[in-house]
Amino acid sequence: MKQRILFVCLGNICRSPAAEAMLKMLLERNGISENIFVDSAGTYGGHSGERSDPRMRSAAAARGIEMTHRARQVREADFEKFDMVIAMDDNNYEALFRLAPDRAAQQKIFRFREFLRHNPDWSYIPDPYYEGHEGFELVLDLLEDGCATLVESLQQE
Ligand code: 4NP
Image (cartoon, rainbow, N blue to C red; front, side, top):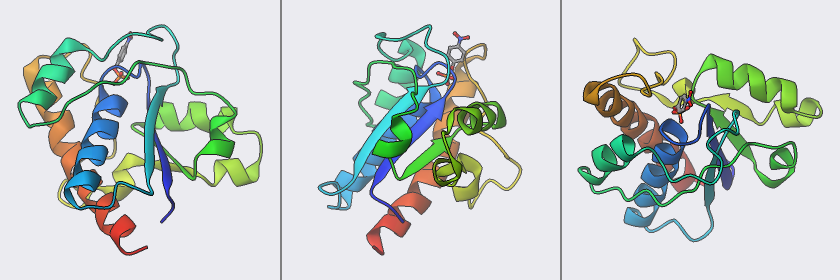
């Protein structure tokens, strides 16, 4: 598996920055953070420059994960910079597919669900923005599952 990973959701204030922070934490815990660059972005730019949603930040903090990301919109140049671009849901995936400049770029796009091992009922990471606290906890549960798979793959490099 490759070494520069970009997580993408809609607003880049809930799911993808949480995935970014969680993967970074797990890479550090496993001593393999040096050569792996992790970032996140949104298909929608309306929250650009903002810190992550305070509900997501506090749910993550309760699991020992600090979120410091500032939101930004995904751009075509990201397909040059990153090896894997991982979409949280099918809408994100389709938006990325449209943005990708060529076939090589399209082949860098993955769905986060491809890395889920313990949650076979979930085919996407559900948008928690209009949900209650449980929605944020569910996002973190799913991210823990998929990020653990990613770490194992990266450890085998
Ligand atoms: P995210 O959540 O895509 O996980 O960052 C959302 C954030 C903002 C909005 C929707 C989803 N919004 O409509 O502004």
